[in-house]
Each structure stands twice: as C-alpha cells, then as structure tokens.
Image (cartoon, rainbow, N blue to C red; front, side, top):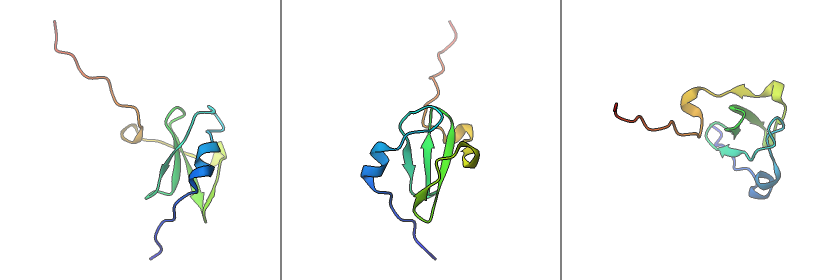
Length: 75
C-alpha cells in the first residue's frame, strides 16, 4: 500500500482557492487541499493539486475548519 506524500510547503504558501482566493489547508490523509471559506476540497492526484472547482468536492459540515458558535444558556 502506498503512503501519502507531503506537498511542498512553498507550494502550499502560494496556492489559494480559485473561487475565494483564500488560503488552503493540507489534509495529508485524504490527499486534498481544503478551502474552509468555499467549503470545498481540491484533490491531489499523483502529487499534483487539481485546482479546478469542477473537480472539488463539497465538504460535509463536520469537515469544515470553522468551529460552531458555543450555545449560550437561555436567559
């Protein structure tokens, strides 16, 4: 079984989401670049990031980097 490879940190510094132009975070296990703002995951195939919105998959709510606001007790 092949182990996932790391993406070059310099490349990660310059890549942005093509939709929002926001920074991306790297998910090594899934081999994806995550755009939390667009709620999309861009695949990395054979070490090459596929930065096409049509190729990205939508993130599930539990995958987003945004933390839900804490629930306040009723007044």
